[in-house]
Amino acid sequence: MSKRHEAKYKIDRRLGQNIWGRPKSPVNRREYGPGQHGQRRKGKPSDFGTQLRAKQKLKGYYGSISEKQFRRYYAEAIRLKGDSGENLIGLLERRLDAVIYRAKFVPTVFAARQFVNHGHVTVNGKRVNIASYQVKPGDVIAIKESSRQLAIVIESAQLAERDVPDYLDTDHNKSTATFTRTPTLTDVPYAVQMEPNLVIEFYSR
Image (cartoon, rainbow, N blue to C red; front, top):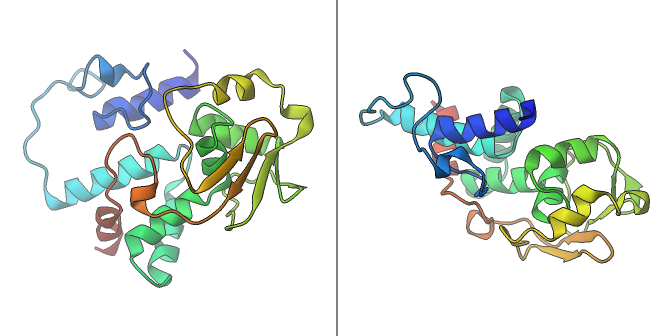
């Protein structure tokens, strides 16, 4: 098993949830955490523990986001008008790698980051190789023509385990996706319940 897959499944097992809804997640077989102490009975978590877990779950879901970068998203979320938790979700879903994943151009969020970094993606006709690039409503995201026949792209479009959300207008025949609007929490097809309000509380302490 590759290091990338090990890291991905370790997040699942540590949290005790199949956060991406993947059929091969080890949590489908055993819900306890990794390591020799993984099966110990856990007591009721404190408020801090509940907030920390919510933060780890949301941050882990988006793959390779660093703590420093995630804290910047929090700072931007509370600066914007409106509900800070909803703002945080909107900022995360506007990441280019998140859009590539949501559009089913690649199978995982980890693959999406690598796919963008390797220069396979354009936004409004211009190549963008920064995974954290923030797309805007109306932006057209496309896979470069020379990359459209890659096996990872063809196989991902056929995955039955998840659907493309309605804030993306996707055409797999042309390998394009238009980001129509910034989603709210209820719009995002998370496989498990996310609690961005607890993440805001965690950083607001």
